[in-house]
Length: 254
Length: 254
DNA sequence: CCAAAGCCCTGATTTCGGTCAATCAGCAAC
DNA sequence: GTTGCTGATTGACCGAAATCAGGGCTTTGG
Image (cartoon, rainbow over all chains, first blue to last red; front, side, top):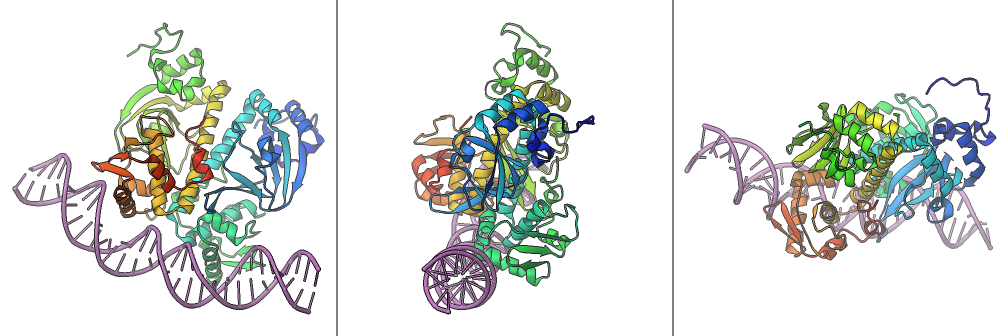
């Protein structure tokens, strides 16, 4: 966080110069030398919506920066019931350190851009650069905060509160007008109704009904089933339930 | 009590020699020098059931190793609804790095022994010893795994599956006969019915009914409302729902 | 053009778990 | 002993959300 002297991108790989992962992601922890080392091993790729990221070579043998798009993490019960246990937005570092096997599936829910690295390269980086691991710890602590916020939502909120909470969370992460206390917002839902229901632990019918209700109440408008305009963020917030934890939200900090 | 350094065990502070935190906790990351540095600033304390750990000086200004007992982390909605978002067993490192304010409450649910350190000492340690931060990252990743396992339980399991899952989780963490594939188990519940319900996102009446049901089915026996004997772990496991994620459980690894 | 497949919405009905309430056991204080 | 308190259990009833079912819109592809 100290003031940088003039760098004119000295030594920073071209690929990385404008990369979000360097500005807000884990790569910000790396000095030019390390950056060059990693960049030499990286490969960018476009992935379309619906593609599994874990299960194939993608994430078992590699780590990736999520540069654009949204990825969902899911867990399933043997009888088909499914729960989304994580939604990741750019620039997020994907991949589970110290563990080869994972019971979690990852899937692109929108078009996605990845910058992938071989497992070994990243693990070398983690050993060599404490700052890198430090960033990883911060990201993980944030994910933990989110997961816990969510436990409250799944365990203790009603269906309508769940849907309102979901919309708020998406708004915070997707909406271009980044202001966390904005009066209105507008964004595309990255998930289908069925996926939202898997996120909230309810059925897609219930999601649909609650969205209809919010529309009827004049809190939101919906276009093409995907684009949501929140006319009254304050009402949406109050429907998501005024809680201490809601105010000091975890996604926005650090 | 100034038994600081009794250098028989090659520089390891007496206090730490038999400490679980050194064997299975974060202190295992420290070499004797660092250990001495930390041990000089530490203070052990007993805390009785029901005492808040965060909110007072306990955890805001300090970090602690949980040496014995069980601590619950809770979040509340403004209307009183509550959700337990974490249960921590010894030897767990308590305290949230990089954040002063937390919307999470921590409370001892059994008698608890802590080994506490000043905030500054720990943060110095984190800067100085990458291995220490590495352990912390591992612990955090484990907590994240647990939280996610749980999201599935809260979002997608029935009441009876929730209670069975809860008993399994407690058995894994409390039962002395550590064997993860044991045929039977026996342990004291660290939580009241109301706390279990806050853990599982259901009501205490439902918890009670489900326990009664399990008793009627001959899966468990209960003494004094607290002591549980699981006669058939396999049946309990099958009631908790056969899931891919259940098998490869997160608590046992690393 | 029509057909088939997804995705979404809405209505009717059922059910699981919540709510309300009564009872009981254990325990501490007086 | 009585009183009061907390926690657990059980029953009766009710309601929020699941389930079941139908129908509409869009996209894809013959």
